[in-house]
Image (cartoon, rainbow, N blue to C red):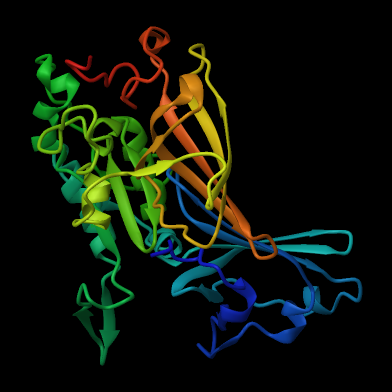
Length: 351
């Protein structure tokens, strides 16, 4: 049950390349495989997943025969599209971005939408536009069972408000100016538009495994109805419920176990967030971005954290998890409290 791209096998042997022009799918050419220094796969709850290829090119063969922008590689069933080239001396770096985000970046132009509280509806409209393909001059909807279908997971902005701290304290819901394209950027793309709106309402927006996630920390952490549980039970946070509907309990991380070697942390109430770095093996990498995990036996950092980032490379049996928890000043009195959102989205009634 490993997270895609983080399984216990060689990335290079399973990686395929799809040419942007001819759409020919083949194994990564030997010229690339033999020149690879490293392959780094990263996922984050602050944006899009990426695959970075680092290569040596002393003869300049690769730089003169590079795959073109728009070429796609597949890693464990996940597609990534080439978006960046860098050359430094004999080294090249190619950065591939999650294909669904690349496609959102290529949706451009003014799209008008009424100002109001249908924020989730507008964001879903942009994502759902990816789920059509042209056949015989007609747009045909892709079925959710299709591997190319892009899923969208988010609470409804208008109805979830009353279940968040802001709504519970009788703060009126804030209408949002919706639409793609601004007065200074009429050619705004959908991903930039979605990021702008997410920032304006203070909700997270990220991509993981061909799914776009959008929502407030309070909701992802399970502190908002209908997922609100006694604070010792995180089994039914929204993301865990979406990913593992039959899972009874959240996962627990301990140092010096078969899968986890080290858990290092930075706990400082003067910072907005605390961070912990988990060094773990790839043999059972069944974690997801945004998932809540419990960390044990690390003193003041013992408690519940959110998986914020994951990273692995092709030549190391270990991977790295970055965990995160907001640090409201009150946590100094109970440093193992819930991973609740910092001000202003605090949770009401937490012990």
